[in-house]
Length: 372
Image (tube, rainbow, N blue to C red):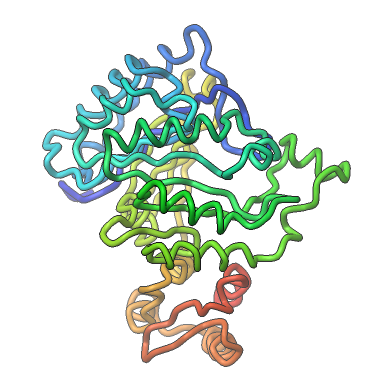
């Protein structure tokens, strides 16, 4: 591994005050000693792993879970630990912290404001109390507005995460347009709800108490996109919108298949075609269970490249670059490519291939048709 190879640094904070009904991500309620134990083992993991010495980290992303639920003193300790592998913080182009509204205090926001190129990503999800209740969210809209007031008084790069396709709920578009008019969010992520195994929402759907999110049409995607474009956002990735110059640099590194190094339970690393996945369990991670190792095949890398490039709506897939990386493709690939273009799901200009407006709602199907 070459010295000073650029990469993104991810730290998973596996704590939340409560579990939302839809959530399949690994997290747990912070206990009397679990946060202290987590921070001590995080420092050990960072100190023992070889990757930090071989990479120059350009972006840092502290995600979860809900990182701010561990409190100011523990957040400061976490940042001090992470900073040991950031010898020149002037090289950091973006430092992101995730937070839920109910745990963002003025003191925490003041501290985050001291970090270089700080970006706050707020987990808002829906924009009225009834819809938040459908998701089993802890926060109310009063908490959302309080957190946004705190954040915008201290920070200037704030994004919001939202969920589309919630059963029984109206389109988010109008409420979201009002929100970004009232608060100048720099970035909006809007993902469709997926039903995760062994969650309260899955149980409710199986009992017929809620409609299956998979059966909900994709109209809300277009309505939200149009509302955000009207407010000055660029729709730059299927689920992501940004004001000029405010794309998420850490996630762009994922989409361009750059190296990323992850620490903490459930964190994933990828470098030189090898993917490591830490155990998604705090106890097993604290006990030193090693990460699982996956050697990506040429086919894995090829399919992942195609999928990630097509998700980037402005850049799309450069066919000449694709063939240079992965060779001339099987005849079926070109046949499927022509069919998807002729059907209007893809646009092609020379070697540049992009998802069309029609193709957005069928993106997974379109991409899968081009896999080998």
